[in-house]
View 1: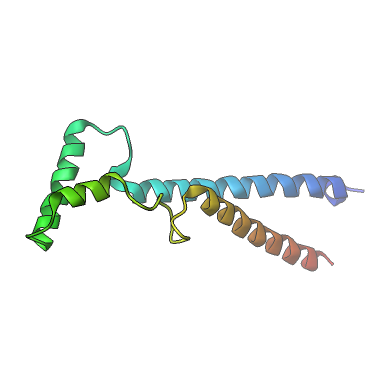
View 2: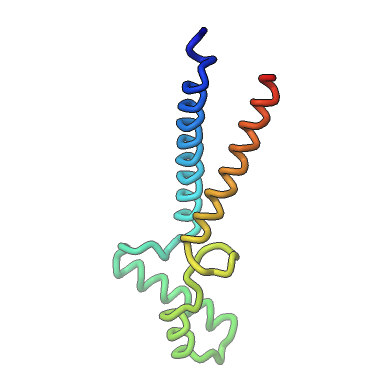
Length: 119
């Protein structure tokens, strides 16, 4: 019997493939989220933070010349949502869980298709 026909090797290779797929999905999602966050990444210089605030206020005043600046600053300081996708804006933990579940379903579909083909 050849080694690649053994059930144990198939299980081991399936686990390794699953972990590799999950890491790849997480890496892609991480890069995408960081690219979408833009200027909200912490650790930026005070000058850049000041420029970002000035840009926000100038765009607000261009849209609404009679806007309440104090209320706008309070709303920006304490936002209601915790970020994330449009899954209720409840933060990154449930979104990561959904990403894992979707990747698992895709992987199960691939494994099933390969199993059907092997018959």
